[in-house]
Image 1 (cartoon, rainbow, N blue to C red):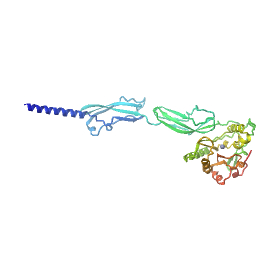
Image 2 (image 1 turned 30 degrees about the vertical axis):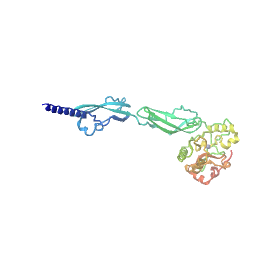
Image 3 (image 1 turned 45 degrees about the horizontal axis):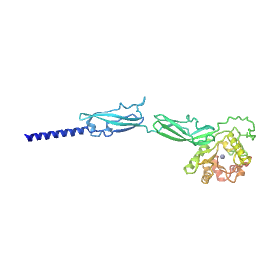
Image 4 (image 1 turned 90 degrees about the horizontal axis):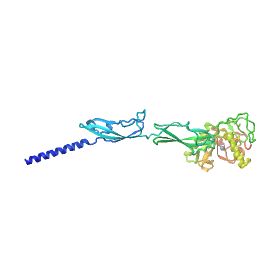
Length: 378
Ligand SMILES: [Zn+2]
């Protein structure tokens, strides 16, 4: 009898062990992933195939993920950014189980520019509070803000300057893009009936621009009327920016900003400042009187070194002298030609002449010599 009791006891102990081992096995979580991450703006969807091991797919019944705690954005089909814990229920071998998964909704998408101006023209004497908002628009699912980095813009001097535009969304994603801010005089409104002398008593040109072989000539013998205000020539502007970009790509120390179009009024203030500082005779050697500046044509450009000064460094000057013609430009005031051009050498000053640039370059002549026209002093 004693023996039998022992056997029964052993058998029942084994049974208990087996049952508990089985229960332990059945209770094992059968979810393979507990953490899910979704990009903001997409609806949440998790299927049981993504969450259960293959063998469990047939055995598990009543599988359900409770997403009711996930709050959608107002009027939207996708949830707010955040972390959500969701209850998962199912039954395996008819035993109900509860587990949970973590769902993270995050925004890693950068805003996009839906409106962008590569060149923004602003009037001289604006400042960093200038309202650029009509030129740029950024879009994103969350709210975006735009920052204008105007550190490089000289609001008090006409020219082209670089500005970075940074659009950021609510979750710290941002995108940066560069544009050109063109600081310029506002378009001239002067009437052609103006008196023949300006306030400084200098003579004012009243004739139309002088053309030879299709090239507009401006030198000390041939001027432009005060109301001639064409702004920057679009073709020439595109070419000078291409030339600058090519130089930068090749590692030359050249600035993206340059000094291009100048109105009659602006040249007038420049010249008068020089006369006050250096005297008229000296000023005439390097600065044009108003109406006689090639910059008023919108086709002349002064290139700047990356340090902001006019280009005079040998590698840059040599490259410009050898390649400017490939872009339709000539170095207008070469050294040793002051009697022909009327100006001291200016290796930075380029004049757009288009197709004829290569022929002029090959001739080794100044524009005056090439066209056989008068130049030199006033
Ligand atoms: Zn110049």
